[in-house]
Image 1 (cartoon, rainbow, N blue to C red):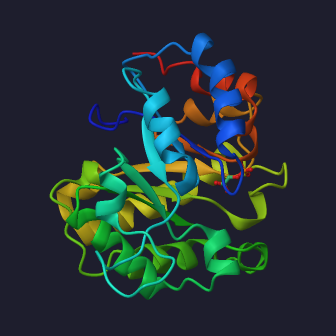
Image 2 (cartoon, rainbow, N blue to C red; image 1 turned 45 degrees about the vertical axis):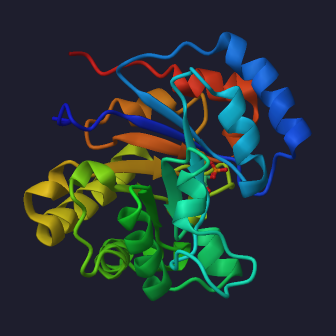
Length: 257
Ligand code: PGA
């Protein structure tokens, strides 16, 4: 069963979308219809340039603020980079780390991902470590070992104060933005691989880490994913950009008590 400490997290990933104008228009539609519920957590991972706008608009609402990346040093000669203290100053509580689009387009490797996770945890910023296999890896029957390696390398030497400070998002690359979500059964199998690795690396703390599924989550499949006790939430790209779709996703049916 899902441990009571693993409150489901529904995290929107806006990617490189949303200008300040578009973010405001989105919230004009989303906020009046949004009802917070104590049995779930909702957060928006948005571009750095709209964090301040969201912070202002989300004041007093039970919605968290997340970044999509951070740099591993706190300050210094790193032109163009953004550090954990700069994010926490803006009220950011989560940050994605190692999204496959960054690994692909910006050559982020496991060592960089590891340094970023350490930097986030040093500053009480909760990292959302993104892992997932490419389609050919799955076809070759190596999805489990690939993802296990990604988790082990990303968390090498990492000691969170509490497992609850860490989130892992399982996002198969072939399911991102394709409309071809993993089946809940395939996702559960991979979540079990990740959970076992978390227990090996973090001992008892591994139990409290939330593991999200991401990749073509929609209003049509959210309830099936959230009906699986192994799935502690979702990371939602495309569907999170449409307020009416994201409202339906955050309103997923709860597991029977
Ligand atoms: P998608 O993206 O929901 O559009 O597939 C998910 C993600 O990349 O986080």
